Image (cartoon, rainbow over all chains, first blue to last red; front, side, top):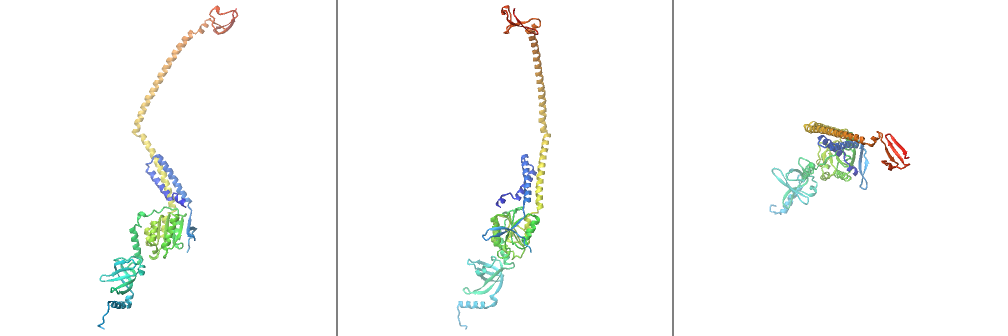
Length: 80
Length: 396
């Protein structure tokens, strides 16, 4: 889980992607910069789409065990 | 009777007895404004209650004072209940208070107002301390009751918008005396496990009293200290709790909280596509602009001047090359004709030329030319070279 935390979040990727588009639109980069930004932008958009596709539905509940540790269990939606 | 003399103590005791016997004075509700309020270090309250024309001393002992939810202060209009009795030592009558409630507002409401003011002054509600709620978090922590409509609403609304939700529920009391402590435990647990990107504290609508557990100072401070952003979704849109003010974001309802953390799937996809398209268009435009620029520079005067110069020099160079070529050719021709003349001269002088006229050359077998009769002996082999070949002879 901690590893997951260190990874770039979806939001960060998306923000970076938007920033690159804005930079490119401003058009004051050198050709080399522009091309490398563009490549990065395309990679990020791929990354974002991948993250969306890879996400899994998960609804868990934290349950405290007798030793005080917490464990996750699948949560059953209550019905009236 | 009229001659009897009493002590002050006896008098005061008598008066106190009269007061204490009176049913009306034994249990009375009085409204008035607090003045000269003192909270003694022993826990007792001493104050004076007044209206426009009169004042009366009041005392509230610790056992009762500790039950007052708000902090009394001078100028506050309150209703107190208690007993009017006499303090014999000073010969004064005063009210021994049992309860105190703010006039007009409920005591809970006043407690809420006071806590709100205190925390506001301390800066717990400051906007610049509020953390940003992540857009599409990896995982969402939900502190709420594990039963009831709230948790179901959050699940329904979020999955309707974004089908691959990742929720982690921390079951907490949302009513009664354990609200603050269990919600605090939830915040502590999520902060310790550090396994969610945002925390929603959720509770359905209810009366002010129902939601009062969320007006807790310790809970407020815990929310303030949380490293993970907190969304407060306590009660309905019109209900406000301290929890709402101190949280990083207030959602009007639990369902709204679910909408705040989970954007609609199609919106996200569109956003990515839009960014991608912007990216592609931007680079296309960039390259077009650069091409255009190059064309413009080419067409500009600036570019034409050096080109003209180059063309001029090119002509000079070309003619120079042509000139040198001509000179070289002429030289070669000159040497060629001189060579021809020399060859003709040499040819004329060649001994071979005389052979054609009938002369011959005689050599011995060692190749020496015979120029005298003394050069040969009888039986020597000689070679005679004539115009068209050689004759071998022996001297006789």
